[in-house]
Length: 101
Image (cartoon, rainbow, N blue to C red; front, side, top):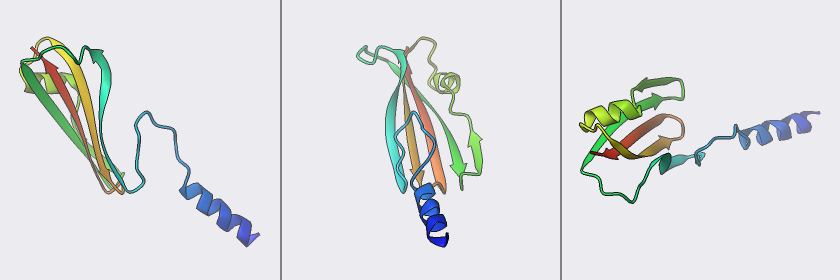
């Protein structure tokens, strides 16, 4: 019985919820495109917005597309990228980058 519980506990460590982003158990550092606009078009302005998470318990900030566009002075959005950095779930940083005019 103890052996079965131990195997179940180990299996639980290697399973998780399905996500739309590739996540690393130890480190995540990805830049991902969002389904907005044409990434091959020429853009004159870039804006970013960032939020953070700590210990997978507290998340603060505003990394919305609207805030990133506002920060870059963008009125016409061309395309958007999203960057994720996370180390062991302790510290996470999520950045939305908007390209446009």
